[in-house]
Length: 205
Image (cartoon, rainbow, N blue to C red; front, top):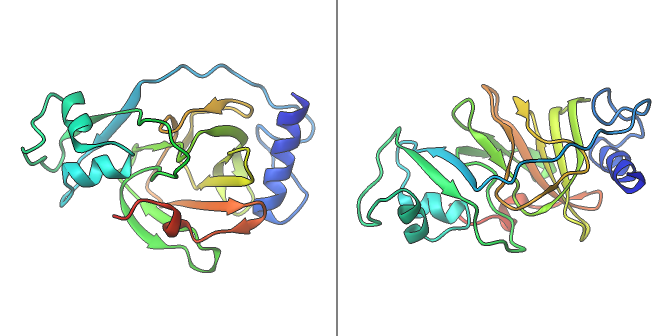
């Protein structure tokens, strides 16, 4: 529990640039509550206009054949807008994957990205890691989850509509950690306190 608490304070300081921990699951006056997370076999994706089975599968670390088989489809049959696909957990790797598919734009000098998607879309762990922060209101960031990948890398998922995890939980790559609302989600990859060029770490669109 001491390590989890330390991770939460450190991660908050790294992404906000201050030592004050916001009110929420990581508040200083109450230690984080660690709740068991059900082991989910995957999640769902609603096909957007212009998407292909290959692009969707590639974004989530899968082969098109794996995604097609999970949905009892032929990989040669085009998917259609609005179609709901089950996305199984990908083979676990050290590569970073897209947390959600959607409209992407640069977040500016922070090197992160803004991702807009259909409200209610699930946001997944880009890589396996431990939840260092799960804050309902992080100053300047809103509802935010920070994963510590235990090798110096952190991923930040800010501006979420709903948080589905608690501090201290270990998440497997591809496991849902929150949902997107009407606003774009901010996503970035950091090494320690340094924001990295997030797009350079992710599979090409």
